[in-house]
Length: 436
Image (cartoon, rainbow, N blue to C red; front, side, top):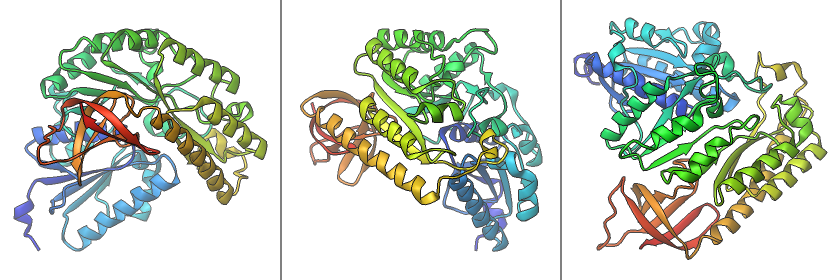
């Protein structure tokens, strides 16, 4: 066992959950580094301090967070770690329960308590560093959070309980942050928020995502800007004008729709019908021909009948989304839906989710086959086995399709560089090609 002195001031930050947590961890790490801590992200070597940034969204995520806490508490009991701190959404939502059930953790912090966490570590919150981060992603792309919290009333969602109400980051601060990232070599910004389309309503009294996009696209060095987590009701169509006019705004939109049944959408309090959703999808595709649409659905919401599910299957089949994910419904306490009876058995929820993904797999295969013979600008993220792995503008890292180019002794593809790739073959979720 290493002695304590060899790991003095070494901090290991462990991040669970979504890209918004990744962003928060990177902010925390920059603050720790500025306070002379030796900070790393999910490092393997022993550290004096472990900070776990948790997720509390649905049951599986909560269980992963709890298991990770217990793992590091066990390491602490073995003398491998001196202090274990827990922050993030699970801690915000269930702090009192966690304090009782896992008292071995040295302290728990909520989603908006970074200054208090730093103070506990005898560190100062440095206001001059606002917006600065230590990237945990490859250096050529970065998640870019433009707002915190959410004002939407979705009945299934606990995010407002953990993240609070919607608060937009001022545009001048975002432009400053993006310029700094570009200077560091970031080429792709992945815009994230609980709801991108609400951006600006709180501070500018209007939806301002289009103006923000327009100004971000002027920043030298930013070659791709990608939009995640757009809300369908009240979608600001002027965003699509910027997407069409600006070559560095990717023809890509992540728009979680949650269901394809009007009855279920009403129960979910989404503020839109299936018919209006389909009209929106058509309008988006007309404004930006060739746009890649990614969505997320929920199977087994309370009261979901076989007819509701068949309506969702028909919706998926007609819509032919480029990318799709589906969750089984998680009955979350203190949400509006918690007062409903969770009446769809878990096995049925999973069967329905599997059926949607089987349908989507066929759609994805057909759409990918149509790409064979075409050439696409591709950003390369990493080397894996016998392949250089990249993405087109229609794919976000970790969740979407990848482009695989076979390694050869004579071929060198720099990571973080763009190349033109001609697609030679495709399967359900990957494209294969040659550097053009």
